[in-house]
Image 1 (cartoon, rainbow, N blue to C red):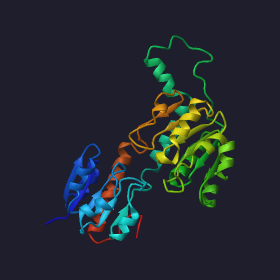
Image 2 (cartoon, rainbow, N blue to C red):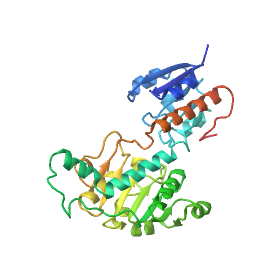
Image 3 (cartoon, rainbow, N blue to C red):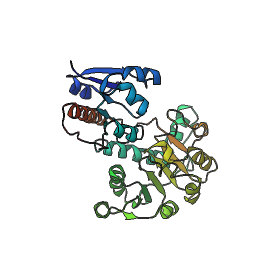
Image 4 (cartoon, helix red, strand yellow):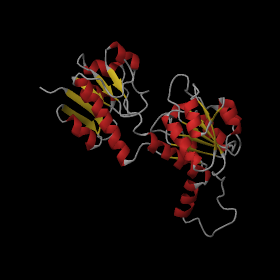
Length: 318
């Protein structure tokens, strides 16, 4: 009898096709409720979750002793309890690399939209409020030739830096570790976080969510930014203190922000929803057809490998 694989959400067929030799259950199109998930996971040898499902000890125990692999369909894996997985000899994998360029596109899209007030402009036009061109209407800062600060200089951060070179931007980065080879390749300079915040016109956040990076950008850090600065976050919502950001934007202590992720998704801080100087997207960083196919395929390949007794392609534990 084929082993059971639980897929928590509907995913592209490109991934499901690779799992055809297993007993596959797809829970739902929308995020499953906790009770539904705990019931559905019973007897699973493999789980393919997304970022919306918390994979903790309770879920692993509900699956049972036969659980061998959790293949997270995301590059981040803060929704998976790695300690609990290690205690149960469960392999955890993610989907790095395949979404780098698409997420970098999203970050730069938000950067341009926030700087040039695109969301505000479209709302004005659609509401019928635009009556004529005006020389002072909806002006915002140029992006070309400005200074960009990249917080978190992994694969996605480096992809954003490559795009910024096309806009002739000066680029600083901050990371836990210096990457001199990437510095040479992308022409960036390392800076301490305070210097980056103080001197950059645009700041794009690409660090993973850990205990150390929770609220990495908070009230203190926002105070250090220029009044004309624009903050972009496509990493994880809790890396930025959403309430502090809402205050800084409403008091015009920074110019604008562009967000694709939130602290308590799908909730958004109500104050942010009222502000014109923030562009809000519903976690679409990797949402191209090609990239979502590649993510589903890689997650499925990891499950096939582990359940076949082979090494997974992209393990994050063990």
